[in-house]
Image 1 (cartoon, helix red, strand yellow):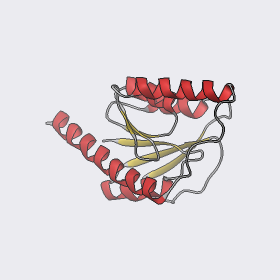
Image 2 (cartoon, helix red, strand yellow):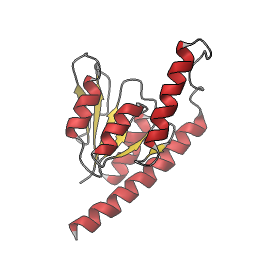
Image 3 (cartoon, one colour):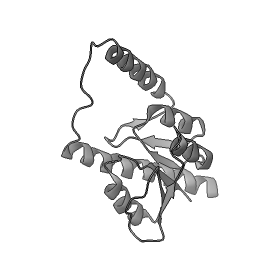
Image 4 (tube, one colour):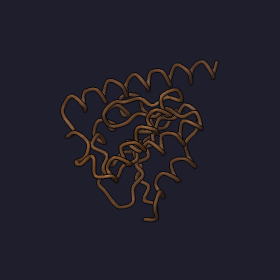
Length: 155
């Protein structure tokens, strides 16, 4: 079946992932550099990785399979997961695809360059209620599409 992997450090939509995953009966791995509270249910598992740079990303990429779902705002991680034919959604509800990831990576590099040059200060816009709502809808859509593919593959 389909598995959901959450890049859990700083993820603002973990409770939404729990709710939707329970509705579909999907296993969720929350991958983190430190301990955190998660619901004590069989569907949810916390994976604590070493604190080296990209350890959580590396673990997710090693585990993820085609048609699995990854929740992360990390664009390079999204690109790596898309290479393995996974589905990727960020906490604001943006669904990354093989067609869109190149633009996302280029925009990320441009913004980093502008910040380094001092031409841009500040971070992303504050996370809002509408971001949470958009995420819920898109996660539901992504899961339903993944389930359709899974069923077709199984005959």
